[in-house]
Length: 189
Image 1 (cartoon, rainbow, N blue to C red):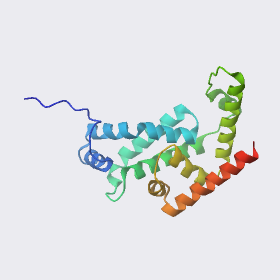
Image 2 (cartoon, rainbow, N blue to C red):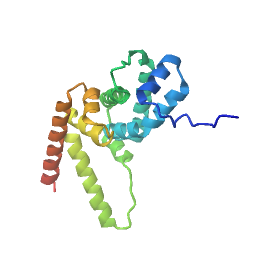
Image 3 (tube, helix red, strand yellow):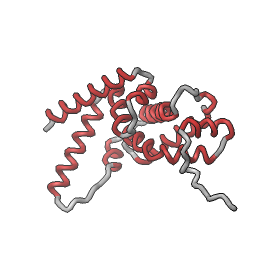
């Protein structure tokens, strides 16, 4: 009797067990399963920081490379997501520091959406720009916590570990960030 073929990504192992297996044996299936679980969310987080799909993909790839290179440093008391998203956050920060962008590049990289109602399109675009400006105006620590929470879907303990702060500090930063966003958007119309 032959064994049923299982997709390597459909494992019930925890992220931590998969990563420890990868670290111990360089098991490609374990690594592929981790990538499959986290790629979409990681890209959303990176895109929120970097605002460009290509730069976000590069940041995720760099984070995965750093993950492989630093695999021996992974501690059993950490959750995999906390460690990986801390690496990703650092990759995004590095990229933001390296960037020197011109306004022409910014204008050319914006997504264009086609709406049947031109007035609705303008209103939607204005709201999106206002929200982006308000988010960009936040202090980097507050913006990071908010991006990890909203786009990354991370809980406050995971955010705290990724940012190297306490869970309470992560909650306070998120609260302050949301309050500032609300005020900024209310003042801006």
